[in-house]
Length: 348
Image (cartoon, rainbow, N blue to C red; front, side, top):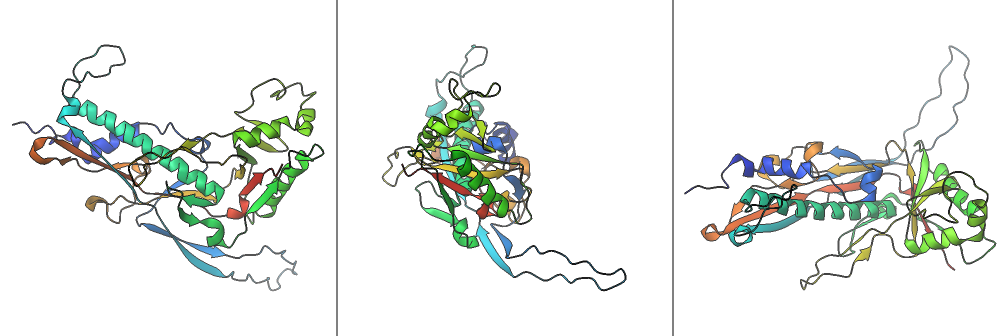
């Protein structure tokens, strides 16, 4: 009998290559390109947290002794890379009598490879939305699992107190521009040798509505002749005010609970919140990619092109009834300067 799964098209490398060709179409954080990918050969990454202080260098007479540098106090800190496996299967009954989908509208009977690839696309998208959840968690300073449990708290790990700015939109006299300057000024004070080109804000719909409805914001755009017109246009996709680009963010997802039911969709940014983070940094946001849990990949840093999702060799079911599919992702979105992350709220 012909073993259709014992072909190059069904090999782990070929299936992983097919998954790689499917773009990560979900996620605003992915679109912003904040996190620099860095493959590693281990399942954890160790950083040296240094409490360095920038000081002025004194002048010296030519030929004289130079000022001496001092060593900062370095503390090694290990961060473990989350392991995200996902299993599914393809049964003979799934493919039998099914019509294939075709871009030109011509449909024939589905092939096993075609069905497997469609299944992999769905699995790929689940990994994509999971990565978005991890990354938005990193931008909030606390990376959480699908059920809300904490994976890592960067504020705690780095000994940083989260900065919170209350915009008090319910008070007509609130200086919203001044609040924006409080955010940007705090970030500038905490760059500590880092650089940034701007500040971005992802806003919950509730916070964004109050922001664009505040009298001082409306007045600022009242006579603005070019650019977005918040008084008559839908500016939820983004506009700049006070040196910050604001945009509405509606990312959410549900998860499978212990009893097998699906949870109510959870907002990545809670109602009434906004999250500020810097743009154009050089070494603040890094996405570490660990190798998959496969024999062939032990202690090998994954290729960047294949790092997001790996596909294991297909496992046959009993009596040749189908195949089990295993995919996994091993990402750690890490923020090396959590002091640059600011949370915004409004108490009224």
